[in-house]
Image 1 (cartoon, helix red, strand yellow):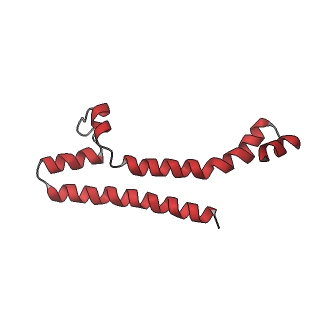
Image 2: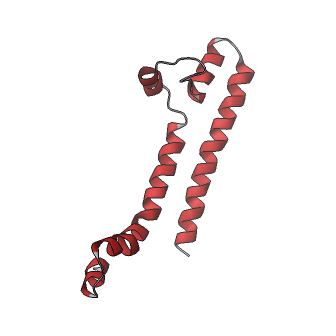
Image 3: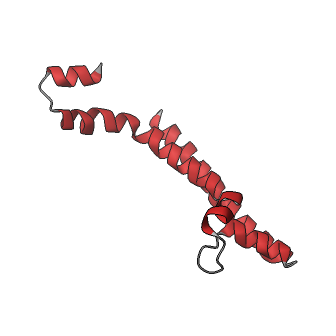
Length: 104
């Protein structure tokens, strides 16, 4: 409806996209991206298969934690796990804040 109204008053397709469509989908896109990133922080299996787990080159935090557990370094694994958890939790809180601000 808003797109049709904008077209009726003479807005170009680019203007409709920039002024009507993008503002309407910006928050859902941002929310999806942040939640996907928060979920990806703990991803392990796909990373090892795709990246090959080359130390100091393709090693991720989840692979590092696994390596620390394998080498019986519980403190290192716990420390990195807490950092990963804080990052993911912070992203979820950011999404919640943005959603609340949008609905005010």
